[in-house]
Each structure stands twice: as C-alpha cells, then as structure tokens.
Image 1 (cartoon, one colour):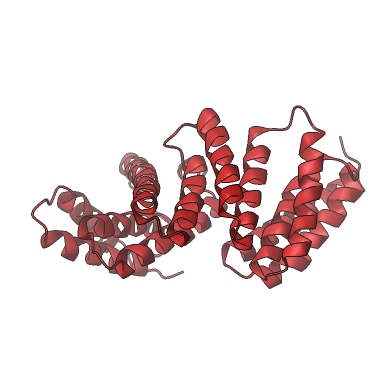
Image 2 (image 1 turned 90 degrees about the horizontal axis):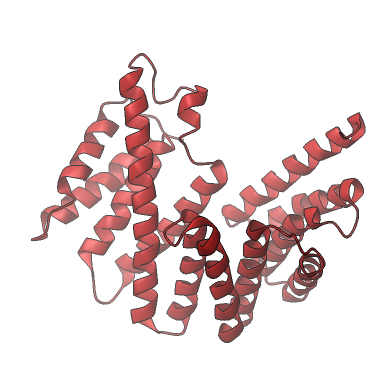
Length: 292
C-alpha cells in the first residue's frame, strides 16, 4: 500500500492524465501538453523512470505533440514508450494497442502511410484477439486505418472501414439504450439523469463517449461530403449519434440528429431502421429538454 504522500501523488497523476486526455479528445492538443507533462513527472516520482506506468503519459504527450505539429518531440516520447514496452515482457495488451495506435497516428502525420498501416494493423490484431473483432476497443484502429486509406484516395477500402466503424458503434449503442430502458422500466421512479450505481454501470465511460462523439462525427462529415452520396450509410451514422447523445443526456442534439436520420430514411425504399429511430425519438421526446 502506498504511503499517504504516494496516494496524493497517485490522485494528482489520475487528475492530470484525465485532464490531458480530455483536451486531446477535444482536439485541444496545445492545452493537453502541460497536463500530460505533469502526469509524466508525478508518474516518474511514484513508479520510477522505467515503469510501464509511464507509457500512457508518454503516448498522450506524443499524440498532443503530433497534434500541434511538433513531430520531433512526438518521436522522442514514442521512442521512450516503445523502449519501456519492449523491456516489459508482461505488458498488457491494452498498453500495446495504445502504443501501436500512437505509432500509427505519428507515421500518418509524417506521411509514411506504409508504416502507419503496419502499426494500425497491429493495433487491430491485438485488440480483436483480446476484445473481439466487433468490439469498440477494435473500432478505433479501423477508424484511423480508414483515414489513412482516405488520404491515399483509396475510397473503396476507406468506405468499407468507415462502415465497419459505424456498425460496431451502432450495435454497441443499441444494446446500451436497451439496457438503460430495461433498468428504467424495472425502476420507474428513477429518472434517466440519476447517478444510481446500477444505471451508471451500463453507461460508457467519459473517455469512450468522447471517442465515440469524435469518431462518429468525423465519419458523418465524410458521408455528407462524399461526391457519391450513400443516404442509408449517412442515416445509420446519424442514428448512432442520436443514441449516443441520448445516453450522454444531450437531448437537444439527440433530437436534432435523430430527426435528421428519420427524415433521411423516409426517402429510401428500404426503411428497416425507421421503427427503431422512431422509438428512439419517442424516448427522447418523453424527457424534459436538457442540453450539456
């Protein structure tokens, strides 16, 4: 057990790391760097300079540095993270996935697409072996790989991967909405805004929510700006986003994108998802408006 000052430092590490992670998720890379540096400094103090516990902070620093265009600094942080992982035989799959994803993003930023795809393929392989091919842990690798193929103008492969990402999140969010609905039905006195432990266990983490919002909005932009429109695919992304905003209690946005998906599907010959989106809109409209 850590002494009291060690526990305080661990609390500071968690706080600075989560702050940096939030900034990176929001695309505020410059703001993320000071918080990530603090997380690294305190992690070194608690765990030592060669501990695998430092890797997440190094990877955040690499991603933030890449985001602001400081590629030499990003390369330095990635080298440190890679060195630690190589020296840690029992390093967790989650950390290895993060390392490969960070390396993939770095090489993509450099324009070295071959190396980017190699590391993203490793990320997908490790994540799918551990969490499953259709897991949300695997979807991030698919998304970043799709972006690389998009930049190479290999649109058939990119579109296929974007569809895979949408399908993974869509299926996950359908289950999440159903789980929350079941809990609310069994305990009708509870509101969807309750902080009850049973409800919160079925919710995504804040980091997962931030990733889903960023990824699905990026896929939506690709769909809406494509020269050849695919309304069915666009509607599916909108449906996923509507469920996501509903679960994160941003009912105004949920209603907006849900209505957009509903109107788009009504114009298509295949209207399989119309009933599901209609049901979601009823859920959204049955609650008082709440905007995050």
